[in-house]
Amino acid sequence: MIEPFGVILAGGLGRRMGGIDKCLVTLNGQVLLSLVIDRLREQVSTIALNANGQVDRFDGFGLTVIEDTFEGNVGPLAGILAGMDWAAAYGASTIVSVASDTPFFPIDLVARLEAESTNMKTPLVLAVTEEADQVRRRHPTFGLWSVSLRHDLRQSLESGLRKVVRWTDLHDCREAVFSGSEVESFFNINTPEDLVFAEQML
View 1 (cartoon, rainbow, N blue to C red):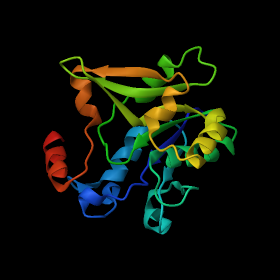
View 2 (cartoon, rainbow, N blue to C red):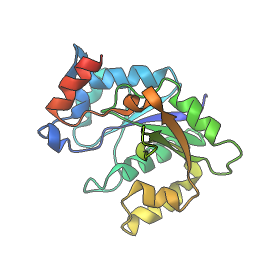
View 3 (tube, helix red, strand yellow):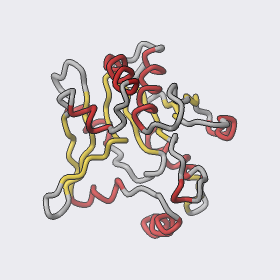
View 4 (cartoon, helix red, strand yellow):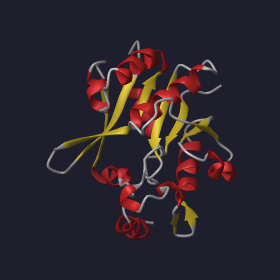
């Protein structure tokens, strides 16, 4: 078993893409989800897909599909918790999450997150991009998460907490900083216009 386990987050509603599964759109002849799987598979040995609804629509991708345990589409924290519970069942201690609509994320994402977690008792690291004006932007769907925090996360969700960064700030979360040309690696596809731009990037 090679850790961390990988979890692709695809539990959103895709409203700005017309209510369809963003991860199933085609980008230059390839399904977006396939591009994300290929990039993550180079960095972890085991991958699950967090998605809700009719899970059989993902049958062709060869992944375990894990659903949110909270109803009502409460956001990415629910997907991260589902990933933690899935990984814990296999004895894993950490997971890395990535977004299903971001096909260009860094090929060394996992290594950079793990490097930043050195000597942390409960690893918790988010990816951060630093813009040219030194403004930093956190990417809450790209992170390294200690499975041991799943009980605390469950309680926080039950109490109504929904914002990823509000929860991570409670646990001394560290940041793995990506800058320069790496910033574009976190471009995510939310709209048809974004899809056109992503095709140009390819």
